[in-house]
Length: 259
Image 1 (cartoon, rainbow, N blue to C red):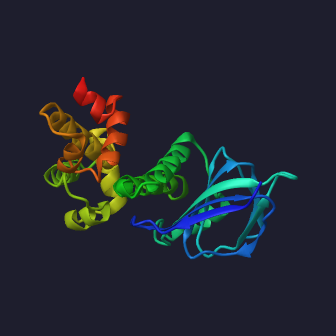
Image 2 (cartoon, one colour; image 1 turned 30 degrees about the vertical axis):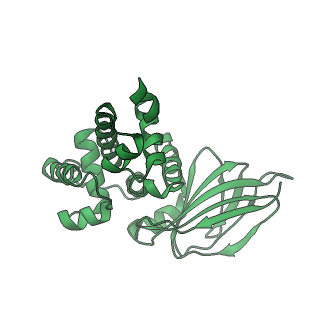
């Protein structure tokens, strides 16, 4: 195995950095970050010391390392390296009360955490899906928060959910962030995503994609080219339209329009 590292700064609120790495024999010495570290092991296993306590990271769960808490890391398997994906998120991504809880129990179990982190990384692969990545980071915050800091906050806020849906409908062809929507609506970002999802049964970014695909479908049937349909339905470009159109309707825009 040859060591490979890829890192970048995406234009997504609360995401400081993304790291994809594959190591043969590298071992991290004790160090700290000023951010929350969301670690996903894709191959192998990593043993690490967090605040002088041993832990194990495997592909079966998400590892959550709090800011300013010392940790190290090395392969847990003899003569075998590991492959990982990492999100570095703002220090205020979770409340301060979550730091001690994550230090004691840094493993996020369950399929929801795994699928959400995978979805975030998939969205981060394309700058055109920044809105989906932002929603995923906020969804992951709620998953982590529910396990680390149980809340009695009311889950339902239908009027707020309706206001966000009206905003998404009115600005369907625009690019904006949940952070901007939350500031305009006077709500916390993660609360906004949560109440929308619980009231309408779909995450905001998936709602937007569905509306845009539906608009593109009508444009294609009206005789517009895939490139025209992409621009006029709010997609970044034709490739962005094609990916989501095929995922939603099972065919590319070109094949759909010919049929």
